[in-house]
Length: 179
Image 1 (cartoon, rainbow, N blue to C red):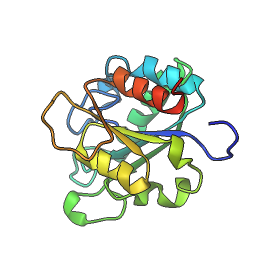
Image 2 (cartoon, rainbow, N blue to C red):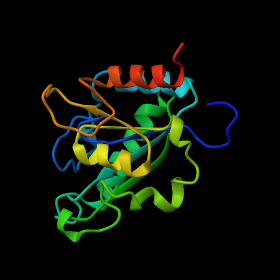
Image 3 (cartoon, rainbow, N blue to C red):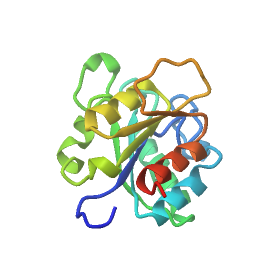
């Protein structure tokens, strides 16, 4: 991670990866971090990683999530993580429906393409998510991907499959510091 001017980034899915998936969360009071996430991000932060949250939020297009509330939810996530010394570098979201076929909905990379792609070190950047669209997003960025799932028989393109966030962090640490 030293000797390069590019950033080592961990792209994070939101619902089901760092916070409990409440299905169309529209209330910042409903933000509940998954066990081990704050501690894991602290570890990665101490190694110099930047964090970018990437999330599909079709609840906006469906009229189930208000944009103002989405912004308050993201503000709460940032605030809670900052209490643990963790800064969220950027947050990107797609507000569209799957059938809109937009360029910003994961697994497409349009939401980060212009802003981030030239900044990241692809060798030391990762995507952590709980759905195959997250894994495909990572593949489309050209970075390693980690799927968090309890399904041991899942068919996935992920580079790594783990059952919790702590194990995802351990894999990243081993990849960037194998000794």
